[in-house]
Length: 153
Image 1 (tube, one colour):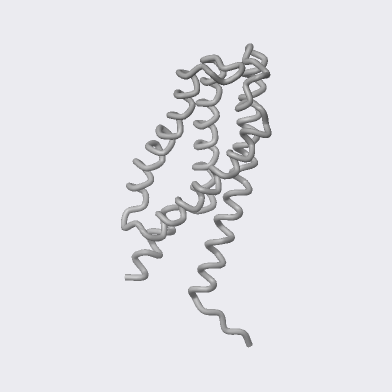
Image 2 (cartoon, helix red, strand yellow; image 1 turned 180 degrees about the vertical axis):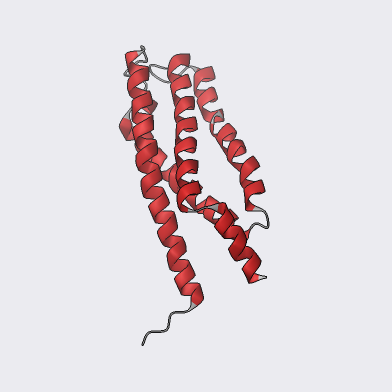
């Protein structure tokens, strides 16, 4: 008979939840960002604007979804009121993620930059956040975290 400690089982579930959330979230966000990039190109964004190339935005999409999943998991396990924390943290993080896009547009020094292309980048950030949060809420619900937090006393 094998005895598994609660903490190792819990840690395994945590890693699995983060991994699955990252996989599903990155797939959904990757599709959304690819569609936005295609529409932006069809609407006249320059092909010289590298941030709209899949080799630029897909790795960053995966990293963003992974970072979000880790942060979501930490908050849902450690915060006394995780829903309240996430309610202000997610929009704040998304707003901060738009600052580099605005800087690229304002500088105007990147090849092929235009405000239409920058708007597409900003829309990509919103799409990634929407896809990721939807997946996190499904695979790492905050309500379950609150119950486990209360059970730990």
